[in-house]
Structures are given as C-alpha cells and as structure tokens.
Amino acid sequence: MGVVSCAVDGTLSGGADIPDYFPATLHAEEDSYYWQTIPNGVGEDHWFRDDKLTAPNSRDFSLVLNHVSATAGTATVRVRLKGRTKVQTNPAIIQRSISTAQR
Image (cartoon, rainbow, N blue to C red; front, side):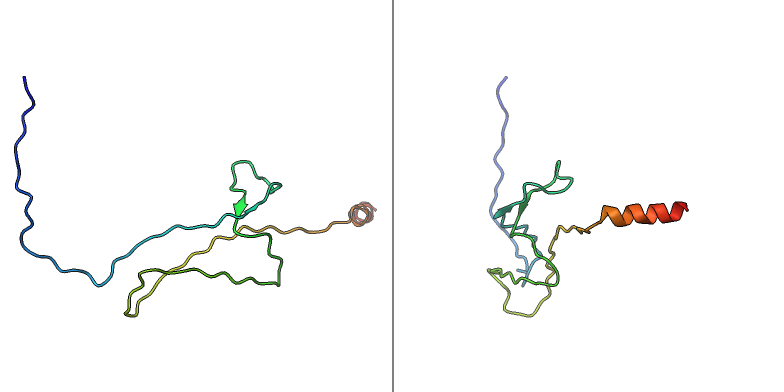
C-alpha cells in the first residue's frame, strides 16, 4: 500500500494587523572570569562576568540594544548576583567567651 497525500493551497488570504511591538525575552551572559574555589561549588556555575566586587565599590556595565522601538515603552532588566560574606573570626575570643560563660 502506498503513501496517501493531498495538496493544500497555501496562498495567503485576508489580512492581519501588524503590531507596533511585541514582547521578547533574551538571556545573555558574558563569562570571562572562572571562580575555581567557589564555596559549596558542586553543581554551581563557576563562570562570572568579572572578578569579585567588594562593597562599597561599584562597577558599571554597558549593553547594546538593537532594534529598539522609536516610541516610548517599558522594559524589565534582571541582573543575577552571587554573593558571600566573609567574617573574620578570632578563635581566642570565642574560647574566652565560652570559658566566661561556663563560670
């Protein structure tokens, strides 16, 4: 038994409004710094845009937006940061506190 097929006319008909804009999602990242010793790093992304940023410093990043609408609109830009806190501890002070509490 052979394959059965039929022809369908695909000519465009009618009309539709062309939208002024449409929503789009873009995920982009630039991975130029590899953090080899990332804490709890098993299964984590080790690649980052740049080396660490220590408070209260700041850093500017630029991006290029192509095909931007000429009319006013709104956009949402999300940035994901990975952070950690490194607290210096002094074991002698901790031991002294424990000894004082036990008296």
